Structures are given as structure tokens and as C-alpha cells.
Image 1 (cartoon, rainbow, N blue to C red):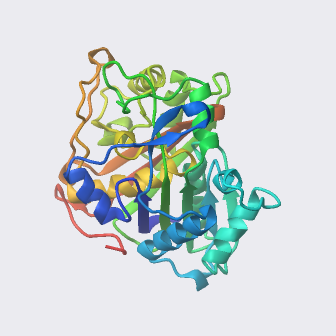
Image 2: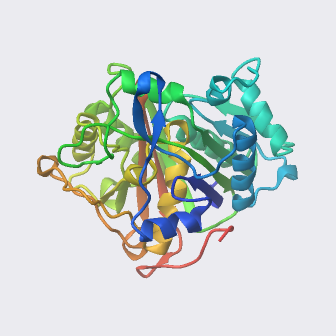
Length: 365
């Protein structure tokens, strides 16, 4: 299999309209969640992109095109485009806009907005959508079928997702506290994110990954499957557990899932590497979370800027959150655990880490 590299990235989130704004927001202490009003006078915290437009699809088009520009996408490249989302355009339907024929119709809309000439695929598998899309795109490049591929994660404002999570009592009424003491639920959020992959060398290499579906707990992580996920990702990457310098957690603030994830990781690693989570900064962006968090993760590593937890960590979890530096990290395992039993992980390598110091940059910096 040919090596696969990250050549372009973009993120529009509650932290800002691009990655530089996101890093600046994190340096300033982050941005809090807004409130989303639901029927019956209830409301829940929600990490909303600060971009106002009454027409839902018009807003979506503006955000998608802005992310494509930040990532430096070339519409006429003929590369495959993987669109990943769990809620698609349900927000437009809620606002009374015309219903499209099927779920793929939203993907066709996006391809039209971007004037995309290559093949377009839809991946919609709940929270693991964009990370599964990333693995699929990587396999195409690794096999020699294509030289480039693009993954676009789109998760935009809608009341349906928030209502569903609220009905299952999975949301916090305050702020998310991943691994935190007295954590009581997650906060959802919006994101539009792009990762552009290529066979041409660049700073970040996608070494491998794994995806396992274990439906014994349709809404939660299973410790043994988390362990298996890590073992398979390491085997696919040709690495040992001791090679991993950092783990980007799923951890979103769920009382049980945070425990299950750490239990599974502890069984896969003799000594847990440093841990980070990004959901307290941008929320859980569902189908977009895989690419959104990798875009932010790599940017944070390069800039040595990290969200600072402003809450106490649960001492019973035997693990805390780190403030890593690029000099200390060569291999990163990033996971997403989702509804339906999805357990997905990828391993990234910082190829510019030379003699203990990282050098270089991604194409769009």
C-alpha cells in the first residue's frame, strides 16, 4: 500500500470561521455554547457556528464553499469526494425548505455548490461517518486507484438531533466536562471540515486505522471493543502500543462512555500515553467529528495551543488531560465512538519530527 498524507485541511466551528481563528479562540479561553430552543419552551447548550443566514441551505452552501477555499480544494482535479454527515439537511426540512428526493440529494447539492467533477460518495453512519470516510479515501489512495481524495464532514444546526439526544437523557444542561468530576452529559455542535489526502509526501501521514461495529450497546462504547479497535489500528500501521505518543479521545463528558473508553484503552496500552479531548471546545459534531477533530488536533500540535480544562478531572478515572507539544509527539491515535456500535480509530504520524523537533507545514498554511 502506498503512503497517504494530509495535504489540506479546514475547519469552521463554534471556535471561528477557519483554523487560525479557532487557535486564537482557544488561546483566549475558548467560546461557550449558545442555547438551542426546542418545542415546549425547553432549551439546551449548543456549539453554533457564528454565521447568520435565515435560509438553511444557503447558509450550508456558504460554509461548505468557505471550507473548500481554506483547504485549497481544486474542483477540476477529478478526485473522489466523500461527504460525511449524520443529519444531512434535516435542518432545512425543519425550516420548511423543500424536501430533497433522498439522503444522497444533499450530497448532490454539495457537489453542485463546489462544481465537483470527480466521483462523489455519501457516508452516513452516525458519529463515525467522517472517520470511516477518511479510511475509505485512504484505501483508494493506498491501493493506487487514485492519487488524491477529499473528505468533507458536514454537521449543521437542526433541532431533530438535539431533541433525540435530549430524549435519551444524554445531554448536559450546563457545559461539557470530558473526564470531569460530576460530568453529566454531552453538548452537540456544528462543524464543516475538510481533509484533503494525497500520495505526495507532506508533514502528516495517515499510517492506518480500524473500524469495528459491535452493537451490543447501540448508544455506547464497549471496553473490549475499544481495546480491539486499538490493536487492529496498530497492526494496520505497523506500530507497537509503546510507539503512540498521544491519544485523541472520543470523550465528550458522558458519565459511562468516558469510563468505558478509558477502560478499553488501558487494556490496549501497558502505560497510557498522554490524552487530549477537543469536545469541550467545539462540542460533539456527530458525523463531522472525525475530520473536524483531526483538523483541529494537527493545528493544535503545530501551534502548541490546547484547550485548558476549567473543571476538575474525575480522580477515579486514573487519567488526566495533557498539554502536549509537537516536540513530544510523533504518533497519534485518534478515535471516534458512535451510535450503532461504531468503534473507529486512525493513527497519524508527524513525518517532520526530526531529532525530537517537528518541522514543516501543511499545504494550506
